[in-house]
Length: 309
Ligand SMILES: NC(=O)CC[C@H](N)C(=O)O
Image (cartoon, rainbow, N blue to C red):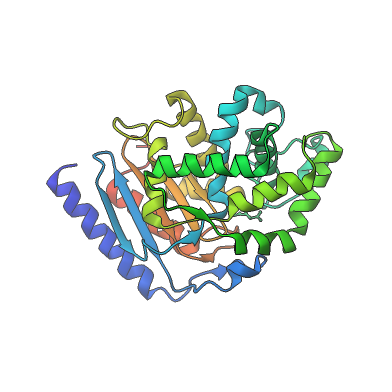
């Protein structure tokens, strides 16, 4: 990065931070998971790791938050490592055009979820990643993967969040049981969901998450967790499916692969250039961070980082 680009990035981050602090309409915090309903919506953080390894942050970038569905990216990397392309007989690769927790398509499509990033798809991915192992072993592997990707051992699962979701996760239980009835879940729904809820309850800061995303940048010198061809495909799925029924809008506005979570975090990859983590707990109508989306829209536009040139 040249000195003038570094100057531009510093200017853009300061502008994004100031705008986020002043924003009155911050979206709505997810309240269907009681532990998340209590999060203060005034928070905002953003962190960027560049291809030269430098990291640049603004706002509450050191505050841990629940990464929720951003974890689906790491779970997918692990499941693909275990099963390879056999995974695609159990989950598709098409955008769903429906809410993250929708059950609608499963009946028409023989219990095969549209993609690995909607809840139904991620539950199948976790079920596949378990591959005969106990949830505790899988979660250990997931944490090892994330810690190695982030080069940071201080990343943990928040048990209170996992418990809170287990108690209220009736929709996810319905999805899991429905897929089990179609023979698309190998384990008992309670077992797979136990792993899934804990996976969603991983907590990270923006600085940690941006570092954990480095393996998806496809840039020299970054941690190599999966093969380059797989990195491209995970990015393709993030671009087309990473924001549920808001994926088209995110691609249009930001032009980069991204994966959101209902905790208000988004991991965004500028291939070859940057790994970006943004967090603001208030969500838009599709369950994606409102200020987070606006912030990466500004960042990508000002830095010229769209994958579409
Ligand atoms: N969009 C999300 O982040 C959803 C994840 C959440 N744990 C759920 O299963 O409902």
